[in-house]
Image (cartoon, rainbow, N blue to C red; front, top):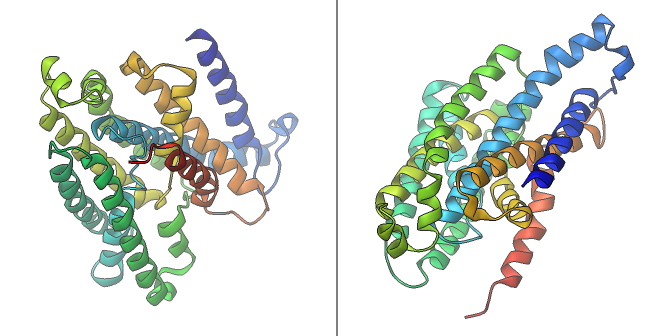
Length: 319
């Protein structure tokens, strides 16, 4: 464990420093004594880095939990459609009754996510062979439908939504002040605690419902707890930054390459940490690849996640 943690710590420092210095204009570390450079780093980039780290960490946590409770290595909130469900709820509420960044619009996003989650939970609790495969296919098809519907709504109301319409399709992290960023980070971290606390139950359910019961955990209650808190977290993330894909798919698989998943809570925390570092790195690429243009962060994660998804599908045995 010590060597992977050391490498991850080094990457965290290096990518964090790069995220603070890189952007539309490079800030030299030797110029941080000037007021202008310090303002750029402290006022604008630091709040963004903190928010991006928390969003990536929570997405990786949710992906790991999904893969455990559904016993499927392809499970991910983006693939299963929960991200799209939240986005369509927020957008529909925002173009009809409420301001799109209002609490009411975000509540509508939570309702649509909850509705899809209820369907997924009902399917996951069927103890029949192959249900997880059908669940992935159901979520994938549902994601296509919801994404298409979202695109239609955004196309019709593009003038009302302006440039922010891309955020709902591909994700875009907003610029905000330090206090607002810390507020969102605090909410995400607090709501993530119940998932981290039940790491042993998620480990047990990944071995099958029978093993889960023999170890003293209720598989139905475990799935319900995981999906409820995951839905709330996804709704908050989508309402802030839109739909960011494949973080929950990539990071758990990368983490399993360097450490065993049987480590329970420790493994979950390392995946949480890796998710934050991964998304900060993606954000650096999105801001620095063609300045001053800022690419949607989801396009960067999709470019990495799409090929990995195809590889995992190719590697799965044919039945």
